[in-house]
Length: 93
Image 1 (cartoon, rainbow, N blue to C red):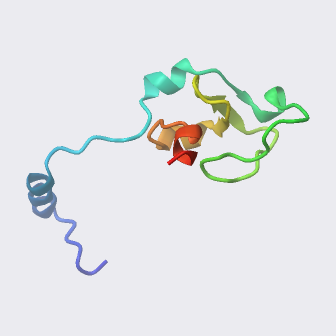
Image 2: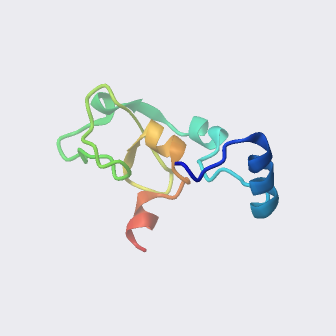
């Protein structure tokens, strides 16, 4: 973008204007505490076939995980970049 100034001074100025920024990603310790497996290992005949975050169909070798309070499976990498909110919460808004 031609209007963006990527200089160090401009970034410091931006930091002063907006304050400290915290990542909304799911904390690594939370992700590591959840059970994960390949889709093939967990799938059954009535399993969901699509990640509710990225909406991609699962491949047999995809690493999936579940949040404790949510019955949906997620690609592990989708959870890593999401805010940790369960798809059930996202769908009810």
